[in-house]
Image 1 (cartoon, rainbow, N blue to C red):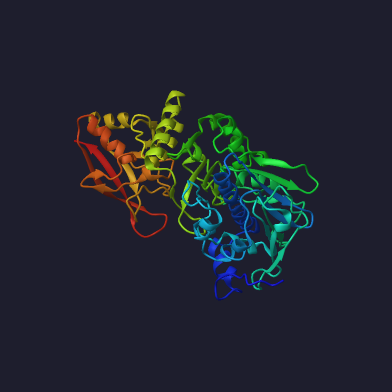
Image 2 (cartoon, rainbow, N blue to C red):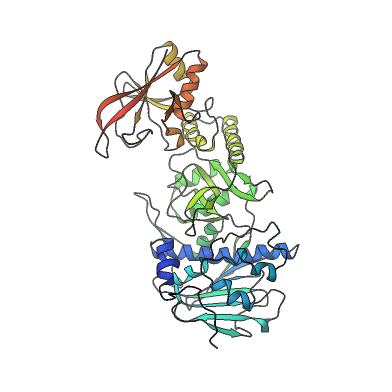
Length: 510
């Protein structure tokens, strides 16, 4: 029978198009859209499972993803489930999350006062499903109710019509689950039996295919709930065990997020084998895991897809872009409902401690000059002082080599060397794009990583960022008992972006 449940906005027909669809999450390939929607569906299921853990001590729970030969994708969970009041209220109340509503107190007394935290914050994720389907069914019951208590909302034409509410048993609704969301996929999104095709957003990188199981495995790498995938004609697969920081499976974690088994890349395999042991958990004060990562020591780890920025353990994007500073994953706070990222969820002190441990590991293992150069650049992002660890890539008289900060300072203090860095014509930052690799008479520093270490801003003659390249060099010269003198000089080289000429920031020791 038709019910009074409807999205709580005035223009239902334009809801997804204007607010809950591509204008919110952005346009992209069918796989990009599919990843966004599947992420939101799994996130909602996770929240229900974790909420039940707080209500029923000892409960673990899991999420199930099913894909059937008729093109239907279902995400199920055995979490709290939803009452009829929730399904016809907060679920459809666009922009208002149930977990933040007053109804939570009535439905689950004490939950709001507990330490439960939902990943969903904005109350718009449900509507993303209509980006991949026009036919959607949501069936749910409270976990302690019977199958005859199941309520089902049916959307037969997207959200342009009022949903149909049905009560009673539902075919295919197992006694082991509380909620099931089923979408009949649009043909252009994904057809049954075909591989998922992924194309990283990096020049020269080839597209590759993977199974749905591999795709969901990468998507859920940091989730705190286990996930099983059922594809018609295949054996069920547990793609994630719910453990976010398993030190025994660090190699597996990197292989999952990089799709290593689906790519013919020897260098990727070798880098994982040589570096996975450095991954360390990043935790909040209450021991909640919000990352499992190691500092990057290679300039191409982003192209290797080895680093994920996640929200609640779920990546903001999958297999299209990657973090450069680290390998593994680190949780970030969402800046908005579209999950563009704000800042890491971990405190600066926690990240500094993690980065310091990474430096100590690399030092202990005898990292080479190249690795030290890359890592030092990224460690600056986490306020770790690399002055005694780092190596700096320099060019002099047509030759490139690495030097330590103490060695550079000594060259300036005792040898009269003039050290320079090419400055962007637009901002106080090293120009990373110029092809210039030599300036006569100058020991030219050419960084290998684009990071906060490239900041050139000065305040009263001293570098603003003490752990940046110029900050470390400034302090190293002071340690030699000399005074650094910084000055900007003009060059005859134009920026690759046109306009003004590039300047060079030079330092000498007085």
